[in-house]
Image (cartoon, rainbow, N blue to C red; front, side, top):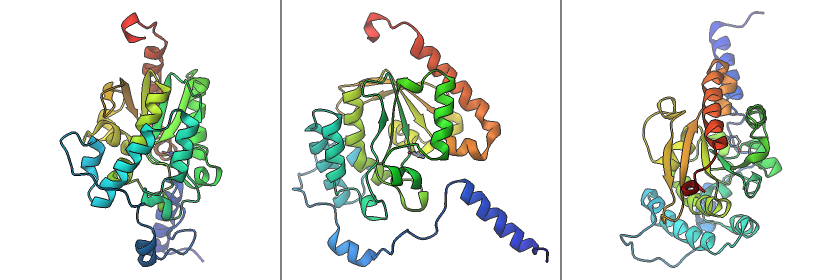
Length: 274
Ligand code: URA
């Protein structure tokens, strides 16, 4: 029996979402939000009065809990002398609510500790959550193939704007990104990459605080500066590989971005840039 048009429409819509990585309407495990609200608030931290020098990420955090969690993340991140200490601190951190919404572990980074290029995606998906490494699913495999073709495979540090999987692969919220930002900034300060590749709209928005769409920002250079002003480097937004899997025609644009970036990375550095 042939399917009714409405069934076909529903099937096609579901296939579209599955392709986009939305593989669950429900969390993997039952989740009692009322109970969670009682027992799993971000770990209590001593509140400091807001000051004009507050971390910019904290300004986007909407609630007192978010602000306290950002503050706690800043303190913990600043105390991590290296990437393995930072990994431990992230693993133990309870201030990001994503940790209690179905993520099974934190996902920090893969790649070289002294990489000249840092790739920042939006957040772990199901595969990344299962393996504890960023960009290891289908989108990650496409990213790897592109990096390899551009001669960048062994020159990258790959991470995300949040370190726990958002449920159902939804985009991370600005609050979740703000809470993770001090850890990400600490990673950047420790790795000292020569440039950042911001993969997709959510990470671009979190890092550059710009409202234009990814299609107008991609392929352009922006100056990224850490909140404490201690570190700055050029950053280029590009299209997310999950988008490229759905829209193969857009690969040309992402490839052109990668070539522009590689050319700059390979250009001999002036002493002032070293
Ligand atoms: N998409 C991302 O943005 N990051 C990952 O780690 C995986 C998929």
